[in-house]
Image 1 (cartoon, helix red, strand yellow):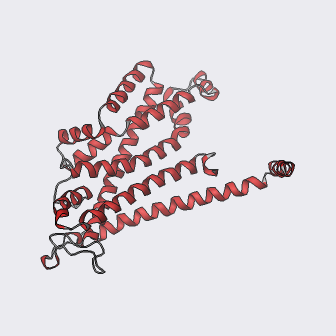
Image 2 (cartoon, helix red, strand yellow):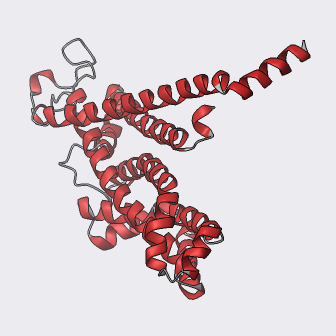
Image 3 (cartoon, one colour):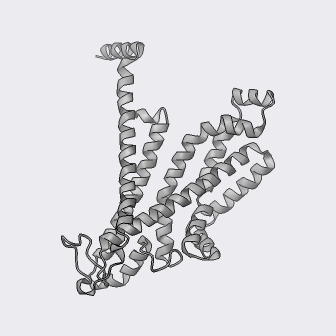
Length: 294
């Protein structure tokens, strides 16, 4: 039995056909899942824009109605449709988290490259900043930055950008420190190429997969933290239908039995966070030559 397995495996490795086809199929499935997840997230954003007006419509005659066919998520104490409000809040959270994650990722990439290429002094300063920010409780630092900037949308974005870059910057710094010892990097330096040229042409393409994966995996953290500080009252203003505001307002009505005000928006928030996490993992598997075939 063992001889047969060894013989078949040796034949597959010799021809290259037995292993390539399953690997190619797995990579295609990963790509399909990646595209479908992105389409689903885009549909959520589009639905939020389409429901913007409906989320603000009030009708006191239908206030505090439980879930039914016309209102699948029920209505709140002002008769507003909770499905429309939840979709609008999610789209707002996704856009804020996306913008903040892109800015935080760009900051991580720049500081990571600078730490690994500008010498020991720059590396020491940036490493100290990374350790300093990681040493402070994350939510506390986020709230302090949001208060310092002035709360609201500007405070939320500034807080997320300035608190989410250290982990990714540390990863990029480590990758570039390994790349610096590669023969082609050393050869380029001996040929007179500047550090900037080497970083742009040799190092950046190599760390791009890790950068994209890390940036996408920052999205769910940014969405959760935006909702958290808004729930605590340090984020977006109360008139904006953000998920944090919806959950915060629903707390006072839970004792009256209006459970749907918190349950359905909370479930949607968790689903979107899991979708972003799955999107990041799919991208990591697709970009990683070994991980795409598992």
